[in-house]
Image (cartoon, rainbow, N blue to C red; front, top):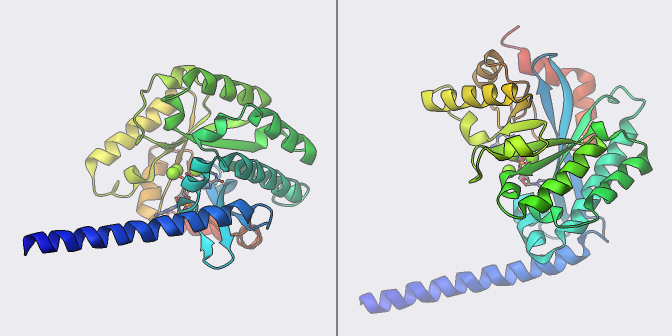
Length: 288
Ligand code: C2E
Ligand code: MG
Ligand code: MG
Ligand code: MG
């Protein structure tokens, strides 16, 4: 009986594996046409500056408008794109799209926004990355300081010398560099001395329970102090409640990003929300 069950379980497991594998292969095939078919879009999530009470930057987050599966989140295809190496071209598209958006906002009331893009470690392998980013900025006439690049701590674990060289060149251009998901990687803090970092983004997992958990509050306070003493600005990710925002404001956190302010939304929707003033007011409604 046990043996039979074991076999059934095994059978079930392999079927599931096969299904996943088929789906993966199909997605991988679709991914090879996605750029040419213009199926990617950027959504933008605003970051509220706690000093000015204004939205001063937005993070560009990629989505895939899949012809049959609907709008896919990056978690469903970015890992695949990294494995296949397609991430290089997708990342280049992201940078160009972000620069085009910055150009479209130039000379409008949104002309002061900075845009942050995400790069995975794999994208740093591309020797042409920095030239491509510079060309994209030049083509649209965008000052480099308007662009932020977010990277996770994985880049401090492997290929450190190469990555340091790439990021130094990027920083020399004037692009701002942010460490994304700070605090959950397995890297040492020593890289903060050597790498030209401008911003730390505290991972959402520290924010979620900050108003209930003393240890999270202690960690956040320490990270903000560390960052400020190193001359870095701090962004808190995943802020969903006014109580979290109030705590972060008290601690001197510079920027907050999260569903409390807004979900990631298409550019047009963002423009409407910004124009209505709803984003600023919503965020400070409770504190006056
Ligand atoms: P990330 O850069 O840390 O982006 C933040 C993620 O948290 C986004 O998920 C965002 O929608 C979500 N989020 C924001 N505020 C809240 C909140 O208040 N509560 C909760 N529960 N979630 C919140 P998304 O868009 O699914 O992106 C996931 C990850 O995919 C990103 O994490 C980033 O690492 C990666 N990614 C996104 N766009 C790109 C891209 O263009 N290129 C690359 N290489 N990676 C990207
Ligand atoms: Mg990010
Ligand atoms: Mg993050
Ligand atoms: Mg992340």
